[in-house]
Length: 372
Image 1 (tube, one colour):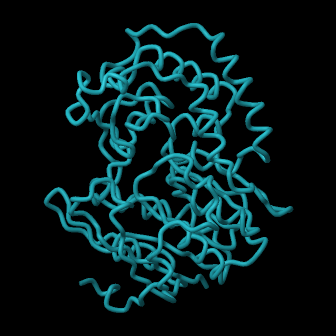
Image 2 (cartoon, rainbow, N blue to C red; image 1 turned 180 degrees about the vertical axis):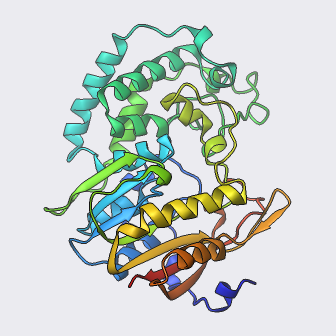
């Protein structure tokens, strides 16, 4: 057990619960591994910030903190280096104000997508094409490119949210929902021919849009939003922020790129079937911690709070690491005015890990620091 864990307090009992009726349906826009619970994000924002505060999340992931901050009347500055994370974050922050508006936009995008030139199958990698009926893949690619060209992140995220699964409302041949791999052994084509037929894009997208906007998209006036694709090493902030609430990538714990490879390929056709993670090695994690201190923490106002959700202990790839203690040590050495106010220890449920048998981190620590 680490030193931090010895001084940690238990989380509120409500953190054990899953999603509630109060959660915005925008949080279910598309899957994302290691996603922070909505209730945890909401509690941290409500406790450590106040209305009209500017909150920074420079590892925005699926946009949970960003959306909850806006719904609670805080302004948000969000960024991430991963294009899929940026698409999800922007989609939630830029969602249409009404279902009627979203459907009108969808109809326009679908029509324009049909008028785009068809894709040559030779330009699509085999590991991508094996997931789809050729006609379905053609429709999905044309629609994705239309959304990218028009910078329509909401509808683009809706497409990525129904990209692969074995259920009828999704686009692919039978496959897993979170991490893309075919389930053709469990569902052989000879026994389940209907699961390998063409799947029309338009009705499935419409159903997805309706699900996404089932909750009222209520935003308080006076809230400003800034979301962008930026590596923390190149992050530039033109203002001070009142609070930082973020979850840095767990060192050597999750494969964000590999496990989202199919969705990321639709966003960036240079994506390969497997890519190493930038935080696989301690040196790279240390560089990330240094960049966070210099480019993010330095812009936190005096007496502002920095709340970090970090893995406690990671045992993976024959390496044991303690990312929470490691990043805390870096931050305290670079800013002696920081004071550790509180440590909360929370157990990570299986649903937030990409593979249930993973031997990576099973607990996370929420570090609450105050500056100055």
